[in-house]
Image 1 (cartoon, rainbow, N blue to C red):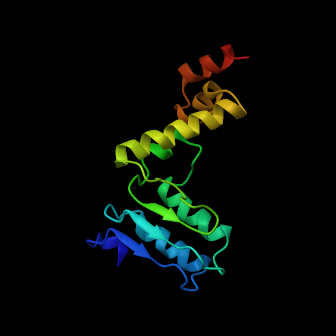
Image 2 (cartoon, one colour):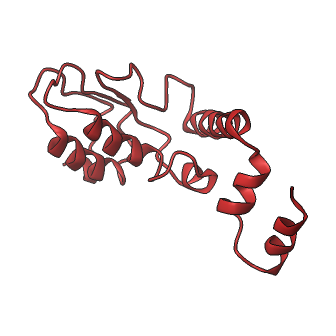
Length: 139
């Protein structure tokens, strides 16, 4: 149902005994949904961090540490679970602003953990002679 982009802006599935399997199915449907703005899934004790991870992968297009993945992800739907008030795409103005915040958060994470340059060259750029030359120049 969610895959067909119904004219539904909010869906509250809180207190519905949802589990990880349900979260995974909803996550698959959200890949193509470009209308839903808020999905509430709080107070579903059978849903663990595994279910949340499936939902998170959807709105981060699989990998929240990859800039390319984030750029291609769903920037519309905010998801609330028991583990996080807003899983992602927080109450920002537009999908474009959500996308910018996700990219900023990822760059900030890489900056605090290790070099953004290493991450970009190792993970984001194509593996060719130019990037291999750049890798040789890096400490």
